[in-house]
Image 1 (cartoon, helix red, strand yellow):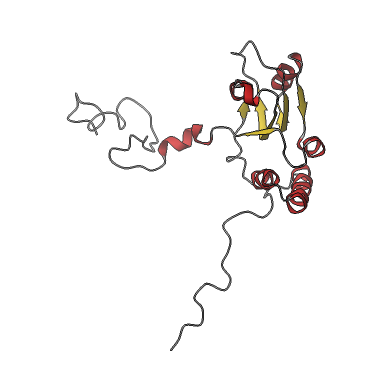
Image 2 (cartoon, helix red, strand yellow; image 1 turned 180 degrees about the horizontal axis):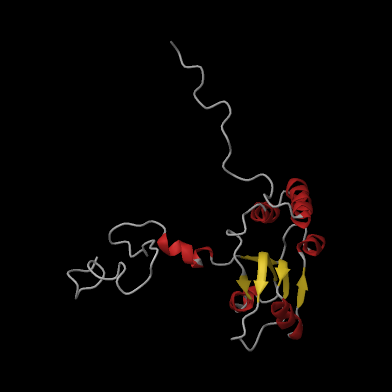
Length: 186
C-alpha cells in the first residue's frame, strides 16, 4: 500500500500569529505592524511584528546604559532606537546621549533620563508615522538569559549548571563533586 501523506496534513506552526496577551494596545499595534509588513514589504516591520507576538519572558527590559552603549559608534549616533519591550533606568550612568527612543513602555526614571538629556521617548505607533519602513533605526533587545531560572537549564556533568534544590544551605549539594577538598570537583 502506498502512503497517503508525505507531510502531516494539519501540521501546527510553532510560531505565534498573534499576541497571547489580551492587552488592547498590543493588539492594535500588531494590527498596525501587520498592515505595514504586508504593504511596505520592509523586513523591519516583520521583525517588529514578530517581537510583538513574543511572551513577556522573551521581551526582556533594556536599560538606558545598554542604549547609550549602542549609540557610542558615530555610525549609529543619530538613529532612532527601537525597543519592543520596556526601557528601564540605570542610576550608574551619568551621561546619556541625545537620542530618540521608541518602546512599548518606559519606566518613570528611564523617561526622565532620556528627556533630561534632550532626547525623545516615543511610542511604537508614533514610530510607524516617522519611519514606516524602519529607515535610520536601530533595534535593540534585552538579555534573555539573565533570568535566575536559566541557571538551571541543561543540567548534566561538566555543564556547570545550578541544580534545582529545595534547600540552599551549606549541606545541600555543596560538598562531594562540587569542591576539590571534598572528593572531587566536576
